[in-house]
Image (cartoon, rainbow, N blue to C red; front, side, top):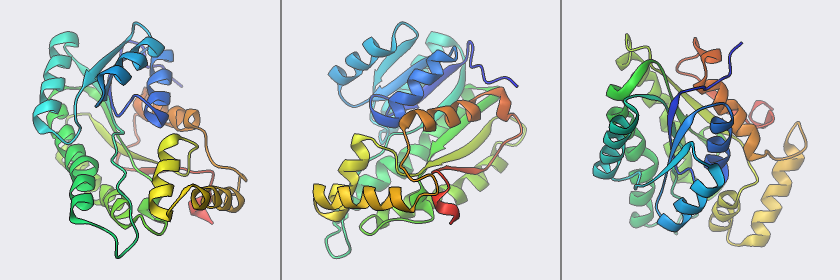
Length: 254
């Protein structure tokens, strides 16, 4: 079974921290050339230093169609091909009912939904016959915590979107799947829980509760999500298309 990504070219949005950075590291370990996007040039520069010579940084806002189109045009000019796209960029604007603002809603939809759809649309013409598009979802698609109604709704919408997209992509050889992590110990998880629950103490309590409820008795590590992403990007998953793969220690199954 071939999990190698040798000579594949991948774009990873939101690849400078947490899960995105872990995915970029593992893609490179498996032989891929990786383009990571981020919003801050200094952070991108630090990321490229960590990832090494097979990585490239691109300052691009996932919510901007113009910036993402420019990025993909540059990828085409630089490499002449695109084999994998990992849609990981995310905006955390959580709040409980009664405190949700229109600005929060618009920001969440712009990056987490609109940006995903239009990046896929722009990337498709560049994809190779065995290309793989991976949307980073969340277990919030089926079990959103309190305070994450917008986020849960967006992640749940991925299922309907991908069901249609795989039909649109018929005949191209490009596969489109969703990888939905459970709780993973990253700064973004803590940030999201603090916003949703009202502070760091409440966030700690939620993490502890999730660990206790998990069949594995813990939350995940970013490297575990990266391993599953490598599988979906590799030839080992050549007949896997249109699925939502939960990587959550079994929590959503009980």
